Amino acid sequence: MADNKRQHYVPKSTLRHFASDPNRHPKPRQINLVNIAAAKVVRGASLKEQCYQDYFYGKNTAIEKALGQVEGYFSSLVRKMIGTRAIDERDGWHLVQMVALQKARTLRAEEELNGMMEKLIKLFMYNRVDEYDLRRSRIKVNNASNRNVGHALALSPLMLDLKRFLLANDTDVPFVIADNPVVTTNWFARIHHPRRAIGLARSGLQMLLPISPRFALMMHDGNVYTTNSRINVISISRADEVTALNELQWLNAHKNVYFPPTLGVEFLEAMMISRPEGGLSDFRRMERIGDGDSYRASDKDEFSPPTDGVKSELVVTSAKALSKDVRLRAVSMRNKPIFHDDGSLGSPQRDPAWEDIVGDFARRVLGGETDLTRFWDFVEGHPLASSIGPWLRRAKRQSDLRRQ
Image (cartoon, rainbow, N blue to C red; front, side):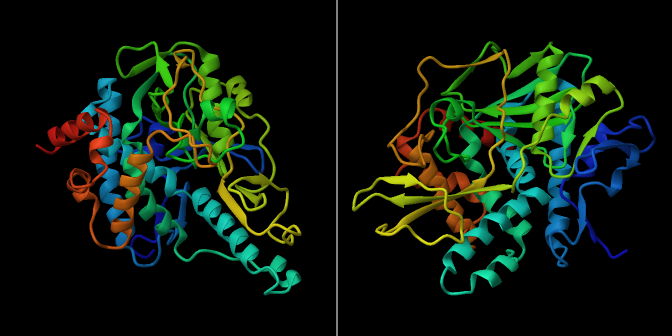
């Protein structure tokens, strides 16, 4: 086999925590899984055969090798959280990058990007290419996985303002992990703004990543949610809450969900709820109303002609939102959440100024003008930096402590 041909999008070091032979020396080699399409349980599958694709990041294996080095550091952070049953706030910068990278680097994330871009391009080709040919054609983004990874890392500072928690599973029901393991939900938006866009900059963002059968990393918008924990560790003592989080992994999965040998059959079956049908991405055409700034949603697909009299449209694409949210008894919505709402589809936002700063930085990174190591210098020189709240100073201080 060619060097680095087998390129994993969920690291083997992550899957080993869920292995079916965890005590095997020197490393576990087997894992239990549920294949979603076949509704089939496979016990003792080869761990190295999971969550990979030949040359997923391209035949130039430099990216795969670089990711391997990053994975080693992230793996040490996971072992540290598991071993100490705590989150070291000095690791915040790297934990945010770890979650952003894992969210972006999966096969499902690649297919989501391709699905969104295909619909957009076919819409732009309306009346330029025969509809029959358009419907038969398949359009893909070159190096989509690399594009996802690059954009995710460049934009990862967007999540620095999120509160980070270690979920400690003190029940007899273990966590499971999917082949698309970073769950993104928004309880606040579902209740108060169900028809607006979703995204990493939105108020009410929730993110969840299982790291072992007993622990998961959770991040959420602290201006919208509050917890009953005085520290950054939340203990879960009810099996139904673990099952609900496992359901999110099931809904978020692409092909497989992996489970440890301690998961009982009844809890495995309870996790396997109905999954919505349809594609992996949402596509909405918003028609401009008259000459104003208001838009109304339409049910038109990418092959439909514009409505007579409509002068312009706004097209909204995104990964499809899950049908459920992260809900824990230890987490509640604030009576007076803090957010910024200008009435647009892109709001409410956690902090428009921070979104602008990170967006400016990401454009420079993607344009090859700078790199992630220069982020804090860039922020200090940005004209909007003074408008960011005290959390930014704390994040900078913790990052400086880690670099010392």
